[in-house]
Length: 593
Image (cartoon, rainbow, N blue to C red):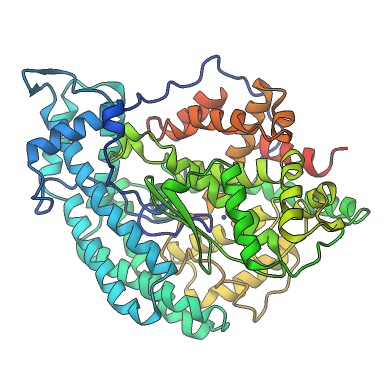
């Protein structure tokens, strides 16, 4: 999510470390990108969908040949989807007879569900941006109805037989990977009854909508009953998914966002971080106290901020013909790959919040815009996981956006937008953007203290899902953990405490670990980039960003879900995820020199 991403079903595209490591070995050749579409096919309008890329839970799944889309003849649908998937004319056929007809039936079913999800994604985006307050009850009911419709398509009885039959057909490697993802999403969908899918959708819509006014009013008493309804649904989902998968309840929820990751591994990683993070925060703050930055002087007019944000998005190669930037209380990324919807929020007192939030969301957006077009409509075209998605937003915001080289590019743009002043000079801006100071708000946190915010939320939500605590226990636990991890007093401050995030009101339990896992991945991506391209920082300083984008496109964006997450990481970097790169990055940026 980012703020990313706003939750809804498996990420509707959502909506924020270890000790010493061995040197990363770089593989000789990058993973081969997917075949690209022919010119004729790429010219066709793609009316498919995605899910908001940042938080959600029940995602893509085959729609089987159901009761919808009757205007498109079934055989034509099959032929179109098969060509679109492989990016070239149908192979494995003799006189129009497919050598894998059951697989082609599945491809047609998934393509249809993708198109319905397109509608769901845009309606959900409108729900969080422009929908008037009085439209909420009707919208919640409509979204619940759509959730039920999608669930019926995803759980159609025909799909089980098709999946079993397709397993025995001769498939290309990418088709085999697609079948693997089809099975995973089908299993998740079939674990949940339709009435629970509807109840979860309605409860989340109501809770999230009320949260928008309850949060600024510090109204925990009004918020808690709505959250209880969401938690009740989430616990039922977790129990059913656990029964289906054999995983513990929290692992079963997290697996929807981060396939293959387990709480035991998160505990290990976060446990190590908790050992060195407090000292790092202390050392960095002592160092920075000797040379505090000059505070940029506002106010910073919102129209100028909007123009600046869009200008920086263009510098980062965001395609405005396939996306847009709007405003929302909680920044997120949504829409579909062909129509990416990003949001940010503005404050006249602080331009950095909107600017860095926009850079963050642009990372999500560029991942979506660069998913392999030949495979859109199929599960294999989806972003691999939400930690991988967060690695893209954090590659843009933290690794690139707050680097000294990139800040040098931002400085003249800021001076042009707000007028020249000492606070907006490049070196001072770098100190502003890398200032470390424990704060109450996760989305405004610096990259050094950010892991503490994630650890706190992970520990609370896991206990909540497992039933060892209840909603009424959250405030006291929050206060205790904020004092322990960051030394801050949050007693009585629900607005900037347990009510600050959209994730829990939206039912996106199991998502929070993805943020710090994403930071680890991002640090590893850039370590490899610099290893293979020693001039990278000099290129960035000159405004030449192709080296960054080309690496991400070849190794992450175009790979989509072709490989399991661990395999994707090894292919891109030559090794498994190694949190030591994250620690090394933080120490190099904040303590070296």
